[in-house]
Length: 307
Image (cartoon, rainbow, N blue to C red; front, side, top):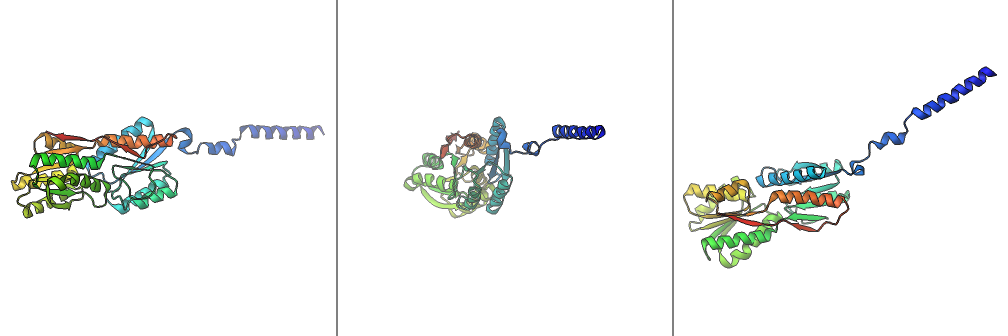
């Protein structure tokens, strides 16, 4: 009996040791909780193209702010491809990001991407260009209409009322192209003779080739407004090669454009401050995730850059 009692005591002691040294299943899974539980946020950012200096600078502003706030920022490049942007947003959703920032390639085509995020209850913030549909929490951008008007007023001042001018339009369907064109034509309709408006898709090489054709068909043209600096710089190359004296105004104030203004080659550009746009977008995402109120539209100031 003593031997039996000793064996039973040893068995109970073994069970107590096991109970004290074995981790519970709850503790095992506690280390796999989402980052949001300890205050960390992950934000996805779909950018229309990183083949444009303006959006590279915008990305840099967003990354600097993300580092400052301790946010994990996942940036993807849509390469100006509508379908790729939708696929990129799907990938960000699969990664489980908390907010998606979208700089649309096209304001209409991006709607399906916005709706995909909506279906997963992931907030969407649009950056620089808006979306024509879907639920968007906030939009961060400059006032493109006001910027177009600033460019139009400068062009009138430089070439005079009634002068023949051309307009190089951005990507058809993008809110930036629509709004900058609207602002420009608010002024040009009354004060200038816009002999042609053609798209060059926000691209420098296309700006060059389109401008070459415009120059051939319009011998009396005196000025050009391009919806962005890349097209303006392409147009400037064509004009300089032709030997003509034509005033060119751009939009965005990229480094190359500002240098061209300082050198007297480009008449002016509308400064959008892309670093500030990127910073504001990430700040809005952080505020939203922190439970703070975020305005529907967060404007970023414009300024005119001239000699």
